[in-house]
Each structure stands twice: as C-alpha cells, then as structure tokens.
Length: 432
Ligand code: S3P
Image (tube, rainbow, N blue to C red; front, side):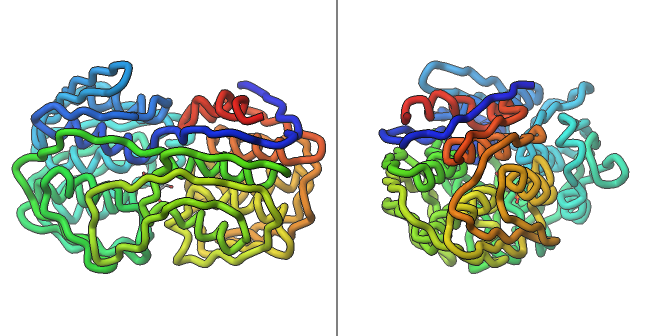
C-alpha cells in the first residue's frame, strides 16, 4: 500500500481536462455489450473500475477492442450473454455489480456468479434482488444481502417499482431488466438521481420517458447505439475544483466537464458557499429526458467561503462529492451541515465515519450524525495523516486537504485513486 505525502501548495494555476466520466463509461461498455452492432466509445475512462466492466462484458461474450483514441465494443445483443462457470469479478465497482444483474436477469435458464474485492463484499445487493425477484429473476446472496451472489435468469414481467432509496444504480438495474420484460416498466424515485442510463437508452432508440419522479421504459428487440462520447467526470473534477477554491491564490480551468443537471448538485452547494465556479450548466429537466450529456469548461477562483446546509433532497445529486463538502466546510466561515445522507455509510467505505475520523485527525471540528455530519469552520486545517481505508474518494480528499493545510497530509493507501482517477498525481503536478 502506498503512503504519499501532500505538502501545502503555493497556489494552483492552469488548465486541465477532467478525466472521463466513470458512471457513463460503465454504462457505455454495458450497453455496448447489449447491442448487436459495434459501438464506438470515445474518451472511455481507463481506470481500475472500468477495466473491471470491460473484463466482465468480455467474459460474457462481447469483444472489446481498446484503441489509442476509442474503445470499440462488439456486443452479443440483449438476450445472448454467455453463461460462464467462473465468477464475474467486479473488483471494486459497485455500479457494475448493481447494473449487470439487470441485464443478466432476463436470460431464462442461465445463471452466473458475481463477486468482487473486500470492499464490494460489504456492499448490499438486496436492493436489486427485490425488484428483480418481482420481475421473475432471482438473486441468491451471501447472508441474503452481500456478494458473492448468484443471478438466475428468468422470463421477466414488467413492474411498477417504487425505489425505497434514491439510487441511480438500482433504478438502472430495473430499467435494464425492463428492456426484455413483457411490457412497460416504471421506476419511481423518492428523489431524482443521476439519469445517465435513461439518456443513453434514449440515444439507443429505446422508448423511455420521464414524468417527474417516474421513469417508464418500453421493452424492445434490440439497442441501436452507434457511438458514445464520454464527457469529463464532475465527481473527479470536484477534487480539482475543491483544491482551486481552498488553496489560496488559485485560479484554474477544468475542461469538458459533464454538467447533466442530475450530477451538478455539488456546484449548486458551492454557489451557496460563495465558491466562484463559472460555467454553462444544464438547467433542471424534470419532465424532459434529453438524450445528450452536456459539457462545459469550469473556471474556478479561490476565495472566502461560508457554511451551508445540505438537505436530503440534494443528496443524490451530489452523493459522491459530499466528503468534499465536509472538507470545504473546514475552510468556510460558520457551520456546514449535511443531512439525509445515510447512503454514505454503504459506499466504498463508511464515508461518514471515514470523513469524520479522517478530517478530525487533521485538526477539523467535525461531528458525525446518523445520516451526515456537521463541521465548524476554523479557517483551515493543521495537517497530519489520513487513512484512505481503500476508498478512492477518501484518498483524493486527503490529498487535497494536504495541499490546503498548514503542514501537509500523509495519505495512507493513495493507490486507491486508481479506481477512478489514475492520472490524479500528474494532473495536480501540472497545476503547481
Ligand atoms: C452511481 C450511482 C451512485 C454513486 C456511484 C455511481 C452510478 O450510487 O454513488 O458512485 O453510476 O449509478 P447509488 O446509486 O448507489 O447512490
């Protein structure tokens, strides 16, 4: 495991391209595998998580040709995933673990085993097992809830499913299963979550609509997806943006960031905190379903911040960036509170515990609650050591904290960043 020291940075200056979006790369590879004709994917993320997805779809019979400037997927179609006896290894990728069974569940008479790393074995799959069971598929999980698990395909029925938790992964799983069900499938979300699956299905010619919190997908014979251009990942860009806001004297531009409104909750939170981030954002599209993924350049300038309160309805739209809201809160005047974010406890680590313990060890005045945290801004952070707990986003949060701290931060397990942002160190080296 790699321990890396991040010294206080003078100021960050320059222009950097956001790394390709992880969520959209996973979906492009999966939908590519579900399409009969070749699908060309440009700007596909080359990271540990998305390599797991390419390996999985290849195991299922798709061909993935990784070229210098694109990935070409030659899929097997909606109903012809190859049955294999070896477990499909999802590695650390929760999105792959929850979306893939949606496709596999429609293969009547076939079965697969899905497994992953130590962290994935602590992440619940009962949330996808229940809707798939209602549709006619089956998941047999360890202790009823965890990987490794078996997926048994069946003849699927369409359902109307109300999600008990706002989760784009569960929503996507049901929508993918709905493609081969016997009618139209509707998923209702308690609060909107990222809609990349819906947009990509619309692009693939599927009849799919959103009406407020309801998404309805029609069954179909085949997907017609010729190409996908993956935008920059706002969740990775969030590390650059946060550093640009809290390292004094910084001014940087992050290029080609995906700004689908279901991903930009973090930017709206920053706006309330007084963070200066300028770009052309997509407005809310609650009764519309665009089929494109808008991008923009984000121009970030360091400056004073004030605390804010993040309520439950904002949480799914900023879920992966909430640790950074805690870090920003350390530098803001007043209190920053996040509520209704109990889902953070079942991410790659328990991110409430990891954030609170991690930042407190660097000098923060932060308290955990059952479903979030409260931080009192003290104008900065002392520094120290932060254990990433094998979680990529914790590792990168620790690194940024170090750059903005008084005495620097040693991140234990920095190699975890390769899960989503392998070029993290190079990108920052170009800005100092
Ligand atoms: C993701 C959805 C979110 C997010 C994860 C990626 C996706 O998870 O935290 O990093 O690609 O659909 P949940 O749907 O479990 O909230």
